[in-house]
Image (spheres, one colour):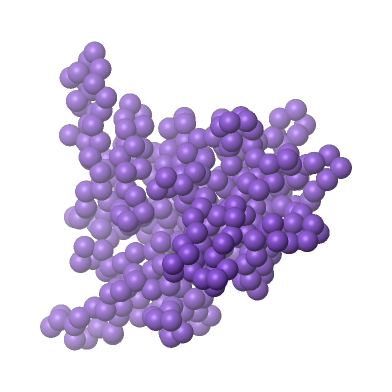
Length: 386
């Protein structure tokens, strides 16, 4: 059973409010939930519920009692989580690119790549053009119908940044005449993802264009071009310049207090590898973060890193659960797996087969082939050589 998240439960142990059917909202408290994967179960009392947002999709399964379960409390299996984009859009206005108009059902496909969603609109009004403005109260208006004062970007707004192959420039979709620059304040560029994308050089914070171009490719999905939602900090219209941050879009921006608390666990989607193949891009909720490739898939040879990236990329939206990886917070870092502990026996599932690229030394090349697998209980990835 797949449901839409309506909100986060504020009871002591957390949990979710979900919409079972239009207008029917129920609370699913954490004590009833267990992570269920290939017959393995794990309680979710210490899950990082703050990463969820309205619009996320979650899949549950009622667990039928067996003779061994008679003394166990009733529980619900949590099978999958597909984050939406709501949390990355902040709490102010958002300028959304329109990908497709679904006139028959009265809906718009908006956003870019992995940051896409479908918004309901009145069928008679489903004639929007390239950009719509989503207000704080969820009203949607086509930008070309707005007065000039409302069309302008303001501090706190969210828009989409992408790489334009035609002009070879960074561009804000719908505001192509404006020059986007990182805000020149160090506090906005401290987390692992931001440090990869924006660097301090020649006494200025500058975006790394090569890495951003790669990022847009990683964030593309199902034929939709990739783009990154950004938070507008302030504008200088006299110079046609907009200064932006990622304070709503990174892992650190997902809630007050930044990352999961000590010993909390969470889930993330593996998006792909950075060009140097040493870092992996993860999506936790609607926030982005990076971890070392060796931590995400220990033992993966560098010689097949790009082949592994291609194999993981073939896990499309319909099979995105195959890219889920467990996370937990230690005293000093975010680590992979629901915990560091590994039992005497390890049950794994195959996620992808990776074949090394043929080379002159074909024998050595064959030795680099293998499979990417994942622990069914701990949600940690492993590399098994052929």
